[in-house]
Amino acid sequence: MSYALGLYRLQQVDSRIDQVNTRLDAIRTVLENDSSTRAARATLEQAEKSLREAEKNLRTSEAASQAQRIKLEQTEASLYGGRVQNPKELQDLQNELAALKRHLATLEDSQLESMLTLETAREEHKAALTNLSQVEGQFISQNASLKSEQDTLQNNLENLKAERTATHSTIQQALLEKYETLRLKRRGLAVTTVSDQACDACGAGLTPAQAQSARISTQLVECPSCGRILFSN
Ligand SMILES: [Zn+2]
Image 1: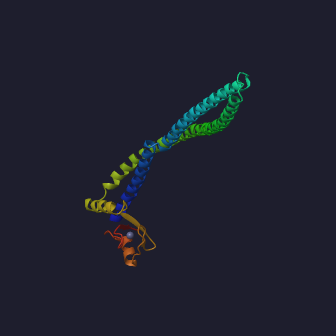
Image 2: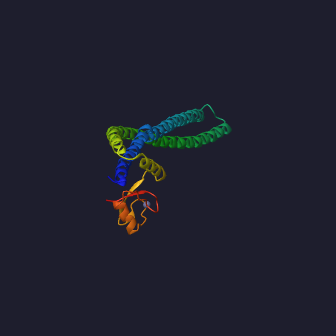
Image 3: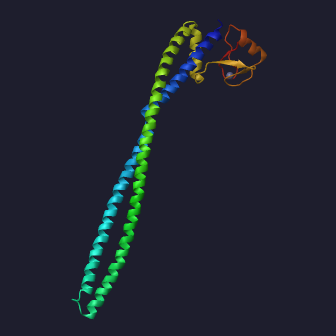
């Protein structure tokens, strides 16, 4: 087996291990940061707060209108009850009645506004509840599939590690050191293939002699541009 072939096999196993680890990290992140459920819960809490406030505002404005109506009835009773005869006093009562009616109209407008606000708050609260239950449902089913994917990946990882140990043992120590150094420097990819007389990792063109060497040499041939070990079969 050529030096490059052994390292190429090791690289293939390592690349798969890297892929599995990347996916396992992503799954852990999702499982540990349930941000969509948290956001839906926060929206519901806010909607509950707005709803309670709108209910309280409506009660306050209903009470204000009711108190105003009682005042108005009392003034009407004085005006039409026959006990007041003095024209000046009657005029004053009439003026007071008109003022009370105007203010009642204002209070009733504000009561209507409170009712509309409450209606909106109820709709938003209902929507937030529905949304939370949907998001929670999604998360539970997503969790189920993610958990089973995690189990499968962990099994794969064990198999890959065993494969790596077997491949690793066939390669000379000095080559392994070179490989590990290159892996660190070149984002995990130390060995690359050659296609159409070019490095598959960086795309640099190779001379015919370099391409030939990568195919048959028992010495390691490196890409003249990125420095990776070239493997060609
Ligand atoms: Zn290259």
